[in-house]
Image 1: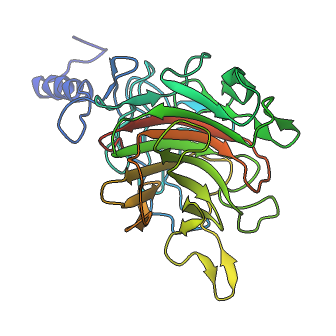
Image 2: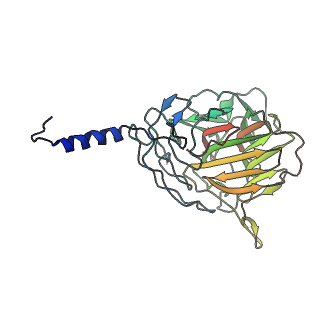
Length: 338
């Protein structure tokens, strides 16, 4: 082989070795290629993960983006995109075929093999296994309060948006706008990505500590008003709320005669992981990979085991707002942040 000059045998061997190294796909923590169970493809993960320290409250630190994988470029969407690293170490972009990126707090994958529910909201139809929950006249379609949005997404090509923002309300006219999925077990993990573009998550429209509203939670049934509902909510910042028994990150809430809310910046995706356990009555909240709430002996009593996970928006105090969700995974094991 000549390109105007003759390469030495040593140089040729060096070029061949470099080609072999470049052609190898990175592996996950178990030494196996990272896969996307929805697309059924193997991804080439980015060469480096976005590193950053964990956020501690009102302005969590974002990690820088990892270098793109050899077979694809970062996926972007609207004002938010998947190239931004989370505060516990961001992910590099996945392959152009839709493969999962490596990295994150637990080396997460988009859809764990044992997930009871997993969706990136890539279809315009109602997500499989979900039930539309709202207050109002019966038999309304789920599109009354939700839409698949292709203008803003964390991964893939679309996300799920709650129709609940300034100048817009869901046609159900309900303050409760949620989808419920059956989990069928008393303890489980839920991983979701969420974003708001108008307000910081956990704050109200005036920039103060937000009053009580809910974004997700675990319940004993899929009815509108279940007996047991452990909310992932905002109530003077992000919190757990069960019948007004509120647990917040340490050092937040009513502090020194005032209020101090744990909030997340608007205009960017945040990874929320929750470990619900009605058997031991211990509920854990991880934000961008960092444990923020470890609520033991909570709630004080659980009359029935947790069997459903629900997500969307429940406007108890308001204001109305637009909320986006993406890459939700629910099941017995932790999916981790992508």
